[in-house]
Image 1 (tube, rainbow, N blue to C red):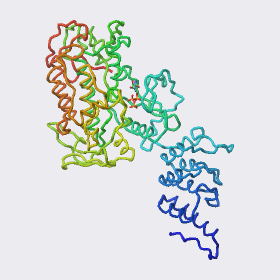
Image 2 (cartoon, protein in one colour; image 1 turned 60 degrees about the vertical axis):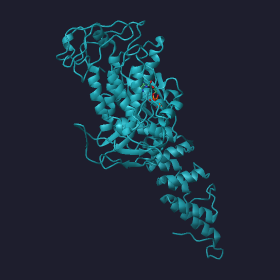
Image 3 (cartoon, helix red, strand yellow; image 1 turned 180 degrees about the horizontal axis):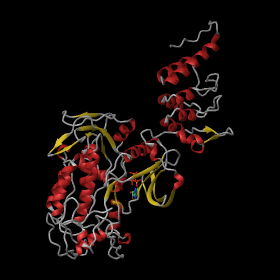
Image 4 (cartoon, rainbow, N blue to C red; image 1 turned 90 degrees about the vertical axis):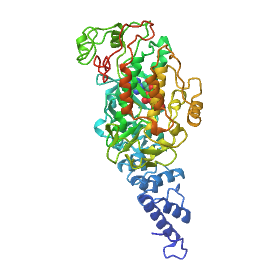
Length: 553
Ligand SMILES: Nc1ncnc2c1ncn2[C@@H]1O[C@H](COP(=O)(O)OP(=O)(O)OP(=O)(O)O)[C@@H](O)[C@H]1O
């Protein structure tokens, strides 16, 4: 369907030829052939800003490309000055066409460029203010059964803020929940939001934050999850270094329990089938606590945990602790039962990567795990996944957003990911799920040592030294809180931050080791200096699975 150059001698004359060129332009715009669109515009000197560049129904190239979901053509037209809200004979704008065509990404793009729709009175209005908003499906993988009516959410107080969202404590039909409200609808923010939504609706585990629903049919977009009273580990550390915030540093036993929770959540994510999840942005801010840990001694202690819930420990009723559990409680047991409760859960999945596993399970030690660890993603290239050696799973190609996220691994400065970032990511080399093992090691260092990794260095400088000079954090004889970090624990953490990612263990192995280590750790009252008489906890007295005192939600 090549165009004919202007022919002055044509029977129809130049005007008719020009009309023919516009018709062709409209056709190529609708089929998304940007190359031919550009050629026609150039050959005929067409001006896409010109109101006459349309058909008899006043349908412009932007209308047709938006209606058919031709993203590159829409983007090019907008970048070259096409009017964003031309109105056709049917009183439709390109945005309305995109919405009716179910092209969520295009609708978002048009909204970003000022796209509007016509209301009944013929006024241009925001899509969110139009009944059409209910038709937008920007979140194509999203199960609409999760949709929440925003009217049922009563925001109470702001509890945190990330790069793209503000997090509120809210009341949703009588339940206290956390609501992340998207601050903007730019492509990157929306990409993170979409990724987080898609991962959250699929992951269900005691150590991943529980998703309750989302608002996606109107702005502001929201994600609703369970409310984690203890906030993030970052909040815990901030609180521990400031008496006024009323928290104190966890005991060694408790820190190992938190590391176990984290490892269990990550083992689940890495071994999910058919789609494993790599978190890729683990830091103190992305792990949340279900209760506040260790109120400061200056503050009144919280009431005892009710004994009525099965599985919860009750110092008053030793037999309830667990079958075969200890009948005599030390001060430390009571303290831990009373104060060191609550689980840790993985959150903040905005940069996560879902990997489809295509090969049979890889056998790892004795346990079969279906992991993406042999699948390597390239931090530089466009969603390149290189299955290595045919041993394990291979990874299907990612979305464009995923590729961008991979390229621009999100860095959130001092409180963000730099200190926890795997060296191969910093060096923009191929990487795999072991980036999470490395970040886990850095978080563990902080948990056990009481200081951020490379605490005396600027975060970027630290990441650079770790990536380029092999620098790693150093342990003290005792930690910041005069606790002794068991040598076995240090060795485990060091293996997890190995320079060679193949040498880093799988999380199932980390769990096995932590379960052994925790058996050798005494329950001690943190920071009080009081050494409880609690003997070493012996296997059989307490299950390694649950610890001597069950972790309660
Ligand atoms: N479910 C929740 N319960 C309690 N507090 C939460 C919850 N989710 C988030 N928060 C708090 O809000 C803060 C901001 O959360 P957000 O998910 O935006 O993550 P972030 O990692 O801080 O930011 P970013 O999105 O830039 O990665 C958290 O650090 C935490 O203190």
